[in-house]
Length: 244
Image (cartoon, rainbow, N blue to C red; front, side, top):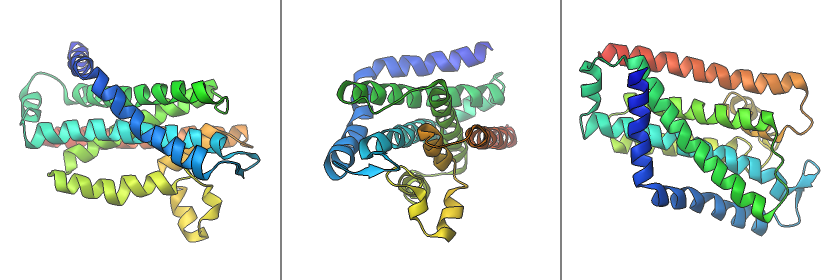
C-alpha cells in the first residue's frame, strides 16, 4: 500500500502547486453553461414538472465531473507514456501495476469530485433548486471513478495527442450532449435512444435527478455504473500487465 500512498501524495503535491489555476479552470465551463442554458435559454421553462434550472444543474454536475475525471487521468497517462517516458519507470519498478492503476484512477476521480464540490457550492449560493441526498453523492462519486478509469484505459491505448483529441470529439463530447444533460432522452429518435441508454453518463444523469424513479431503477443505475467501473478496471490492469 506504500506505493499507492506514494502515487496519491505525488498527485496531491501537483494539485497543491496548481491549486488556483485548477480551481478557476474547473469553474469556467459550468458557470458558462449555467448562465447560457439555465438563466439564459432556459429561463421560464419547465421540464418534467420542474424548472429548467433544477433540471440542468444535475446534468452539468454529471458532465463536468465526467470531463474532469477523464481528462486528468487520460492526459496524465498519455503524457507520461509518450513524452516524459515515466510510465516505463513504473513498469520496471517494484510497484504492482494494479496499485499504480488504482492510484491514478483515484487521483483522477479526486479532481472530478473537487470540481463537483465547486459547482455545488456555486449553485447553492444562487439557487435552492439542487437537492443533495446520499444517493446523489454516491452516484456522483461513481461517475468520477468510472470516467477516471476510462481515462486510464484510453491513456494506455492512444499513442498521440491528435488521437486523444479525436476520441474527445467522437466519444466524450457527443456523450456530454446526448445523454440527458440538457434535455430529456425521450426527445431523441427511438433507435438512437436505445444506444444512449447503454452509455454510463445517461445513467448518471437519470440517477442524479431521481424524478419518479423507483427503488429498482435507482439500483439499476448504480449497478450499471459499477459494472462499467469493474470491467474497465479489469481491462486496464490486463493491458498494464501486457506492458510489464
